[in-house]
Every structure is written in C-alpha cells, then in structure tokens.
Length: 390
Image (cartoon, rainbow, N blue to C red; front, side, top):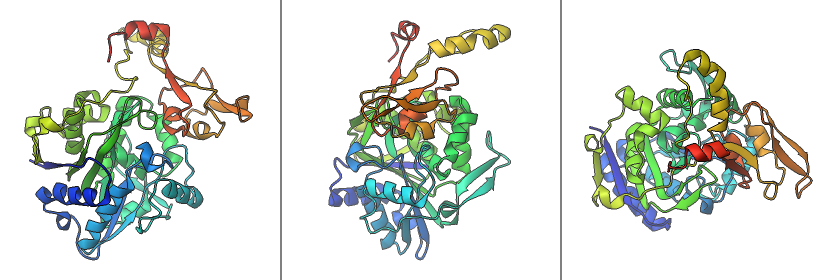
C-alpha cells in the first residue's frame, strides 16, 4: 500500500512550516528518498493567477521555500515552474509578474522562464492522445507537485491531480476546456496528463485552503495540515476524506475508482499521522455547482431534443456583477467559446458581457476573474429542483 503522510501545521511561520515539512516526509524516507545530489528538481505550485499569499488562491511561498530548502539539503537544485490559469498569456512578462504577485520572486529560488512546450504522444490515453507539455517540466530530473486544497466549481476539488493541468501552457488551456466541456471528459483528460507528466512526489498545502465556490471565489478555510505522498490520486483520496467529500463525486476520482486506481474506503490506504485522522477532519462547504440535476430525459431522441433546454435551466449560469467588474478582460481571454466581450458601461468605462448562447458552463470566467465579479446564478427552476441539495 502506498503511504499518504499527514502533519499538523497551523500557520505559515517559516520555522513551523519547515518542521512540519520534515515531519510529513519522514515516513516516506525523507526528501533524500526522492531527489539525489545534482538533480534538477521542478517545484510545481498551484498558480491560478497572480494573487497575494493571503488570498489562499495559490500555494503559499512558505511551503515552497521549505520544500526548496530540503531539496538543497539533499544536494539537488530546485526551481519553480508553472503555467498560470487559462486566461493568462504564455509570455515572459506575464509569468514574471505572476511569480512576483504570488510571493515567489523573493524566495531565492530560480523561477522558470522557458515557455517552450513539446507535444507529448499519449497513445494509451483515455481522452487526449497528444498533449502539449511545458518543456521545463519534461527536462527536469524530478517533479514535485505542490497543490493547495481548494474546492472547484467545475471539478468539485482541485488538489494534486488537477494541479498538473498547469503543465499545459497558458492560453492552450482554453482549447481543452472548449473541447472537453463535460466534467467526465475533462476529468479523464486530467488523468491523462497525470500519467504523461507523473510527479515523483506530491506535497499538499493544506494549512489554509478554500471552500465553497473555489478555486478563486470561495472562502478561506484553515485545515491546518501538510500532506505528502508519491501517488497523487491517493493523496487526493485522503484529502477528500479529511474535508468530508465523497471521492466518487469528484469526476476524475470517480474514473480512477472505476479503473481500480483509487480505493473506495479509507481503510485501504496507509495513512501516517501523529494524530488520529478523525481529529484532523474538517468539513468543507462544496461548490454551489455540485448537485445540479441534468440528463433527466432518458429516451435517446427526446434527450437530444429536450436535455439542452433542461441542462440550461438546471445548471448555474455565470453572470457579471457590474459593480465589481473593472473591465480587465481576464474573463474574455479565459472563455473557451469566445462568448464574452467588453461593452461600454461600468465604473471604468467598460464591463464584461456574457452571451446567452454557447456557454458550456465550464466556469473559467468565474475561476479567472481577479475581482470576484463573475457570479454563479441559479434559475427559479434550478432552485426549485435543487432546494434540498447541499
């Protein structure tokens, strides 16, 4: 059985994070079990956008710094590499600015600015037979995946598996959202990427996470742990247990369970923790998108005719809060269907407008808005049908 290790860490004080990092890696054999002297080690954080550490949108710099320190103690050479969210251009100026906003520029850790990518063939993949991957990740000797515990309005959870979507360069992510617009297909693609760019180690920032309508618009929640595991799927399974989520409701975890890559009961995982796992559990509020009923019509002909209308009425829809929108255009860049545009209005002269037709409910606009100006609204019918859903 693969081990998932947990360690208590209640805040981001440097010494406390470093001590907890040593503790969480000890049952796995320490950092030296994963990196060797002279190796180049890619630290892959969750960088959704340029956001301050206090916002809990990105992996905290204290966790990045502690990991880099242990990598250096093992004689290896760490560097930070990621491609930010779907609405951010893959350019050196934008990447530099994003690193700086996230608090990584002052850590003394080299920051990757090589934006080249290669096409990685994946003939055995479920969904994506050819994947565009950042060359810097593939050139690294070791990849340490460093996600943050957050809910996600499309995938329900974003943690170790979802974090590897950052291997796809910049705006190319938009195409994946457009082509793989259902949670099941998108979830299958995430597992394809994980297998194409499999990290050697996963270290999870669960000191503070996000609940509700994450990954950027939710509420901060203090889970108070660091987690580490060689297996990203098992790491996410244990995180689901800690925050009170049934792993089967996470699209990619449901696929993993069906394929035998993930257990169905926590007793099947070897969890190492100084405290009983029950004491570390803290329920997170799920995203408001969870539980919407769709696909209600089962007859094939009627399903093709009626389901689009039902799905439109029975799923949340993104709408612009004109009081918060500053017309920055982040949602325009992030929209895979190009149905969002800037029009005259709003306090800055322009405001985002979301077209009624063509929305695939991927919620990229909500995810990428730096001002929390994209709301997830429900129809009357949605509220009526889902009034008993959590």
